[in-house]
Image (cartoon, rainbow, N blue to C red):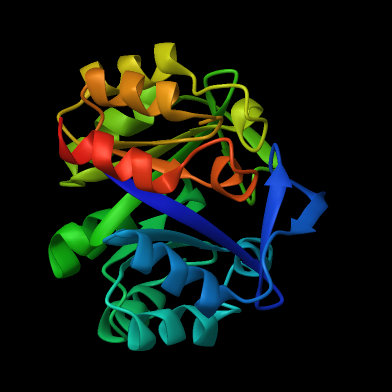
Length: 239
């Protein structure tokens, strides 16, 4: 299982939110690039980044920040937030982003996902964010009537290989991941499932690993030091 430390970005600064609420934004480190380099030094191969300004603006906002991480580290960058067009995807992939995440657009414009997968293959992932099991969109501000596994199956059919699943009610809470829903989506599709939201400590990492999840995104647990990143990497390496 791969570990992806998270850096969410507002105004070029690393922040964390509580349950996706922008009013709870709190800066968690001084500088994005310095933080990314620390993760790399610890042994990480991947990093998960989110353009929170972009998710609200519905277009890339902090692109320079993410490209700086690509240029100045050896990390593979997985990026979401505000990526809504083929032009956005092409820009980021050509700039060295390893995996772009399509979120709201996967529900609102599945044809774009299909076209993107055809053009960029496994560099395209889909983020499915759910509240009470139903997909939320537009920076988590709108809730749909689409059940999360139904969208996952649709994405699998158009060729998506990687899905990032977030239970919004767990995000930023340090309350543990939603193992029930993670197992449900992992069993519903053959895609690689990356767990996001609620991961607290090494026990959670071990449970996710034992449940055969492809990856785990860790944010608040790292910044609040309830999870030792080095230990998490070691546990997953020795699985």
